[in-house]
Length: 273
Image (cartoon, rainbow, N blue to C red):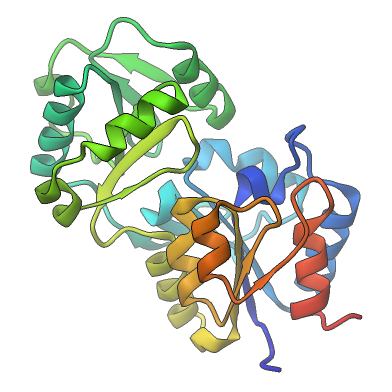
């Protein structure tokens, strides 16, 4: 079996259990992998603010450790001293996403690495939950002109799961062709630069570190994890993964409430029985 030198791990539904905790077994497995020289890269749809506590808890803050945020919109060292990969959302794509959100009567916010912005004066409960989890301050602006100079990483529609299913089904073909459109959770739909994906960022980071794609492993559970699962040397689906991830993954581990990440690391990276 190929030696694994980089492990890309999603956060929500993967690294964290349903109580939003990192279990003792997962912490120990991450520590063992890191101590053996394996790069453990937290790879998430969250912005940097939403990852800070996680990488601190895992002891991964360093100028030699890396994190991938915004669904692959940015890859950088965990101490933010070096940016490896950064793909912003083009203004014309944002305007198309904004027009689509308005047509669907859906809440929309756009995100930089420091703030979320919206022109919607009323926010639903799922917006509050999203911004609380990722610790991203929300600014309400009056018009697009107020944010014209902000380097956005993604635009996000947020709402009740059933409604978001309906909205996703209505995304125009042109927008699907021009943007990377994914779901990170059942309550959101995200629009990013076509070049921005977890897989693309993971491969860019592996190239920088001199790591062959075959020497990478990715663990995830949701639709936005599909590119890294497909491109990794070993793509691992969590036991609680959506059918899409289960179908494209090479192997499957236990779910996020039963130390799935720890079991995958031990079996496929540390080669423990």
